[in-house]
Image (cartoon, rainbow, N blue to C red):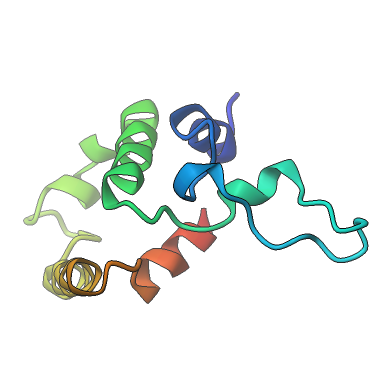
Length: 110
């Protein structure tokens, strides 16, 4: 079974940062940057993040569950407050050019 990180690496083989740039060196690692460091930060380009999310959704099929797709379902995780938070984060990303806190936090959850 593939992990979420396996899927991320499949979609973004050069890492999640521009030009495959890496995070700061890991402490106690002789200044070396671990290979996995390039996937620790959220994508800078929204289309890359969308590609990762769409691939995960496609592979696990969760998008077909009523909680994710049917506003009339008794439990719907994509309610009005969620949609507003996502829209606000998208506007912030568009205006600043930097991933918003919501995107960074959710990427960290992966």
